[in-house]
Amino acid sequence: MHPRRLIASFCLVAAVFGSLTVALNAPAVAAPKPRATVAIADTATLSGDGQTVTIDVTASCARGWQVLEAFITISQPQATGMGGIPLTCTGKPQTFTVVVTSFGMAFQSGEAQASAFVLIERHGTTQQAQDSDIVQLA
Image 1 (cartoon, rainbow, N blue to C red):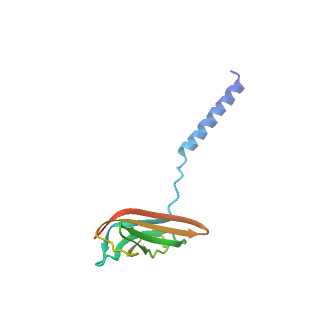
Image 2: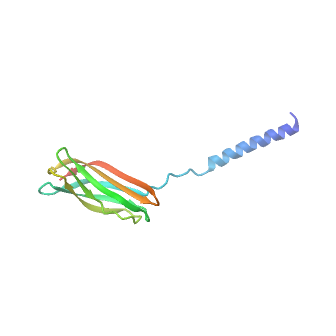
């Protein structure tokens, strides 16, 4: 092999190896940190007349964002209700005791489907968080 060709081949191999080394040692790009979170407690307290359910909800949103919507719904076959989560964007998780009021029929003790939703906005960009789980009404 001609010396120039040998040097060119060596340079090409070195460049490829160098590129692979940089690529393999580069830090992985982390997924962006969520700007909003929400989590529902496992149990809730049923009022004596069954018209309301009290449940803890932990939520957060990044400082500087604005809450557009924050609520929880609880459903059983015979009853559904909703309650607002009074979230403000402080950047720290906050736990709220939320009263969910039935839209009509009474809730009953036992299992219910709970779903929480938070929608936030900043400079025209929105982000959301949600949680859904079966909770025990007692």
